[in-house]
Length: 102
View 1 (cartoon, helix red, strand yellow):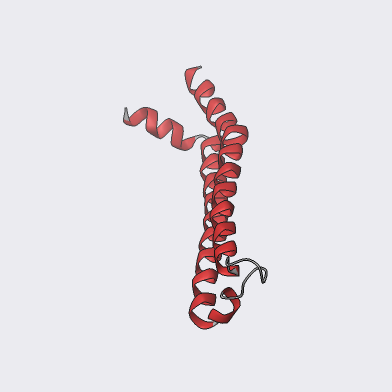
View 2 (cartoon, rainbow, N blue to C red; view 1 turned 90 degrees about the vertical axis):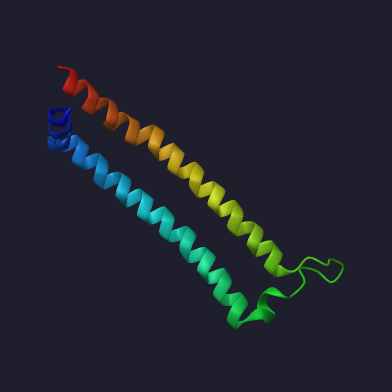
C-alpha cells in the first residue's frame, strides 16, 4: 500500500492536482470568510447602514437583504467548487489512475 502511495505522490499530475485544489479552496474560502467578517464588522461598527429599510413601505432592512445575499453567495461558491471539481479535478484524477494502472 505504501508503494502505491509513493507512486501517486511522485506523479506530476498529482502534484498539479494538489496545487490546483489548494488554490481553488483557498480562493473560495477567502471570499466567504471576507464576506462574513465584513458583514459582522459593519454590524458592529456601523449599525446604521444595515438598519435602513429597503423601502418605506417594507419592514425588511438592508441587513436582512445583505445577509440573504451572503448565504446565496456561499451556495453559489459551492456550486463553482463542484463545477471545477467535476471539470478539472476529476479529469486530472482519472489521468493519474490510468497512469498507475499501466
